[in-house]
Length: 288
Image (cartoon, rainbow, N blue to C red; front, side, top):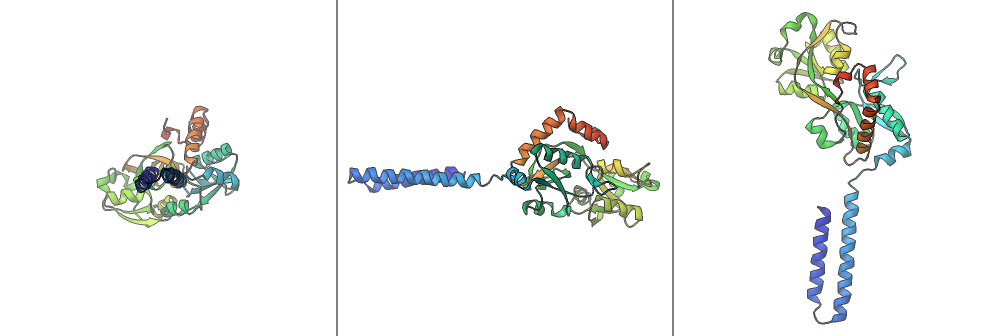
């Protein structure tokens, strides 16, 4: 649109100059050349302005030598092992993507509610943390193709689970939700009472301690962190409140988005994505 407007203005300049120069052939030729030069210059400026909308994050990342990945503590996508190293399906995929770019990876633990500010401020290069592709996210970021299916589910103590199998059964509960998350959005949509906490891991702690009656978290996290054989054996998940998809977010106009989509396609084709998904038991959620 900027280019079209600029060219129209330039053509109007040409018409104006020619109309004012009807007495001299020499003057006509001279003014016509000037008008043409002005039109070209204006169009070039418009093209420069449009190209400024593109963000060369690839060059930035390669210059820095690492990819800054915004995450939260979210098993099985991003979490720390016993040595304090970040692992998980998303963490491992991010490391492989960085490797494909010829750089290292650094994980930056962020306040999820501030993810867009962190991204636009340059504190991180991408948000890669089981991020639901909501309207807010897709309007504020340049997002990858979706790679995993997910849902927001209700987590409660096992001994009361039979009472809370559907969303309408849960109106009396006080929920813990991650601030700015898809879980909070579902609490608001269903008219639930809720308390905002730092992350989904904290939401589970609130239920386990009895501070809150229930939590709303991602189904992938619930499958990995609650129930028999987990650290929250006394908890279980019941009602699924929605269905959604995960994607990775970059700055608007970032050329890393296309690079990641190419990497995803290659990782699916050569089995890398499937192998990493099986490591963290999320293979059933992969979008084929």
